[in-house]
Length: 114
Length: 114
Image 1 (cartoon, helix red, strand yellow):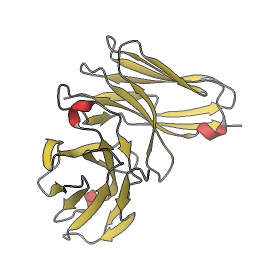
Image 2 (cartoon, helix red, strand yellow):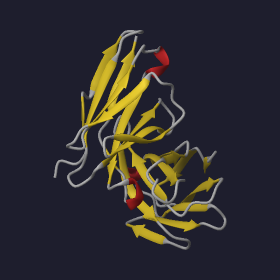
Image 3 (cartoon, chains in turn cyan, red):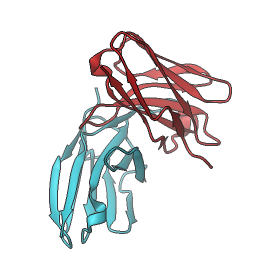
Image 4 (spheres, chains in turn cyan, brown):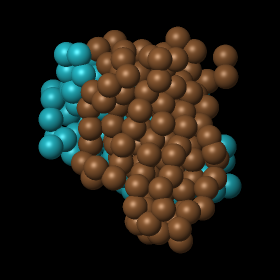
C-alpha cells in the first residue's frame, strides 16, 4: 500500500525567510502533484511533476521530484503572508491505464508571520 | 469554462439517512474521481468513474456507491450515514484514466451528519 508522508506537518515562518517542505512516498511513481488548500476551500493545483529530476517554479514556490529517492520538495523563497495555507503532495501510484488514484500526504499547515 | 462544479455546497443529514452528492466535470474531461476529506486530514480516494463504470476503488465500504451519466457527470451516494461520514467530499475530473492528465477539483460538498 502506498504511503505518502510530509514533513513538517506544521510550519511557522517569518516573512522573508526560506524553507522547504518534504514529501516522501513508499512505492515507485513518476507522477506527483502539489496542491494548496485555503481554510474551508477546495484544492488548488500548484505543480505537476511527471519525471525524475523535474523542477517547476511559480513565483516564490519551486517544486522538484527525485523518483529514485521517492522524494519531492516544495521550496518557499522569501515567504509572504499570502502563502499561508495548507499544502498537500499527492502521488499517483497506478500505472498503465489506471492513473488518477491520488494518495495524499497529511498536509503541511504553513503560517507566515510578519 | 465553469470548471468542476459540485452540488450542494453544504448538507446536514441525520444518522441512518441516505445522501446523494453531484458533480459536473470540467469541460472536455471524461473521468470523475471522488475523495473524502475529514477535518485536518488529506483527501482519501473513494472511487473513480470512466465510461459510466467504476474503474478504481479505495478502502471504503459498500455504503458508498456512485454513478456516472452519459454526459460524464457523476453522483456519489452514501447509505446508512454514520457520524464518521461527516467530511468535505471532493470531486475531481481528468481526461481518461490512462491519459495521466492533471486532476482538477471542485469546491466540495461539506456533509455534516448529526
